[in-house]
Image (cartoon, rainbow, N blue to C red; front, side, top):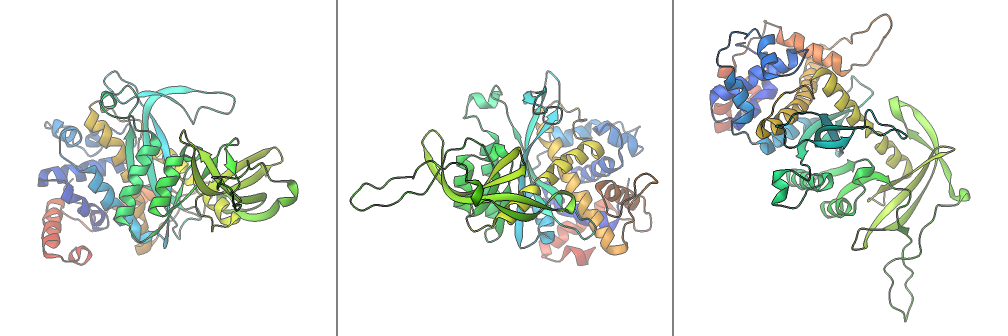
Length: 434
């Protein structure tokens, strides 16, 4: 593979600054192409086989790109975020969740036993060996799809308690890793309005305090037995209380009907009520000021949502929380089309890089397909038993694969690397250069 189309190389050239040698960047381009074209197990040898490099005797050098080369993954996340940022609205919506990558092997130190969220249900709990990843994605709306896409921009591995690194330091939970990621994102975007959406696992005091400090609006789900209190009533001549009496479930007379944006672009009418209150949580009895929203999904199904932004209205909060499910769709599509959970790396460095690269591949494929759509459009693939008018990730992936087979616009990766280096040193525009 000596050439790449311009529409693809444009999104890959910024990553060349991560590699010290030109040969490493060319290997990166080869593995990127193999990751798109591969349809079976996503291994290094599978990538080389699909590109016709069966006779490559120095195949071990491609493995060294993951387990030996010095690649700054933190800088790569920043580059990826800058690519996605122009497509975002003025209000940036981030979704955080944990992804379980099912892996087995004696040499994998970071594996542990976790609850399988896909195979488990309310009445049946399934456990499996795997790796736990904390993934932060940015929600982007495209004109060719009613459903917004959750594009992963940051991925960090959560180490188990018995990992050798945790013997010398404090164990970091998923919330601790998410807080570190938020500090980095706020440093990169100091003046943007950010909303963070998470599930019930992220309803923690530490995350609320970090979001308040960074001026990020947090929306998540609360436990039904959360210790919610009313605001204290200040009385003269007495010692001021930290909080008022315990806040119980609102009475039925206080509930109202609201129309909110629901799944699949539908509108749904729900009963809900909101109260500004204080959340007493943690061993140190810390107080967090928030807005609690009781939502009645069904007559016998009721949930409690919360947000640290007291100015938000009930329909907006519920509609934003529903958007969290788009990240679950991203996880499923990464497993089905990009081969997450089919890797076979055993070294610690290769494991910490392979899965974030596959999640980044998902984001790059969507960005490249969006550029192709803006140039000449993409026709969704439909069948006699399944007709669709909106584009899905399978259509985007097929469009990028067809673009790779387009020989009308060849591009030499070695020339691209030299061109990008010269443009970055001269401060020129990369788009005008290529």
